[in-house]
Amino acid sequence: MSDQYKNTDADARQGATTGQEHRSVNRSLERGLAIVRCFRPGVGSLTNADIVERTNLPKATVSRLARTLVEMGFLRRDRVSQAYRLSFSMLSLAHAVLLDCQIAHEAIPLMHDVGMKHHINVGLSTVDHLDMVYLHVVHGDRSRLGRRMEPGHRRVVETTAIGHAYLASLNHAERAAYVEQLHSRNSRNWRAVSTDIDAALEQFDKKGYCTRIWHEDTESMAAPITFGDETFVFNLSYSVKEFSRRKITLELVPALADLQKAVLQRMTVDDA
Image (cartoon, one colour):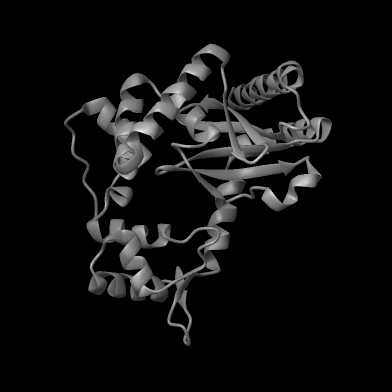
């Protein structure tokens, strides 16, 4: 099995804590979940061959586990193309996650205020394996709907502002273990990726946030918030053609900092 499916954020934290402790897992369950992880926005249907390519699992194993997932109601199979799709039951699972997400309930009204006031997009994301997944997005910039993120969209950690902000939230040992996993995924161009990560972490140490141009003239500014043992990331997305560096510094940087502070205060009060 590829490292992409064997390693998780929890593993990075555990490895950083114990150094020698080896996790005990159910291999069949692990492989079945690896198949489910193959599906994401933009990848709605996958054949057996597609899943084999993405997981490095044997063809017979994929066939057996996929049939089980169909029988259990997590996947459905097209009779014509024989491709697999996620079952609609996944929607109820996703809805349950969001309903149980306290920070989303507290943050969404505040995110909406920031987005509408500055006419920018505001996102809330968290880490999932080696990616960041969006929990909610406020679209305050109506002119950029064609390039907007939506809840459930994923972005890689190593080349995004939200991913860099997450890395900045980790302590040295946690970050070293996590970056080692990123190295495995980016072995061919690791020097460039590593340099980019180092620059982002240096920016965070100096300014308290990470920025990155991610689509032509669109820049994202991101900063983490940690509550308990969970870390989330807020990001502001805006056009560098519409926001000068001075305006970004005077308006958006304080807006992001105030959003972090306000949400953390609400979470602290609710937890008291």
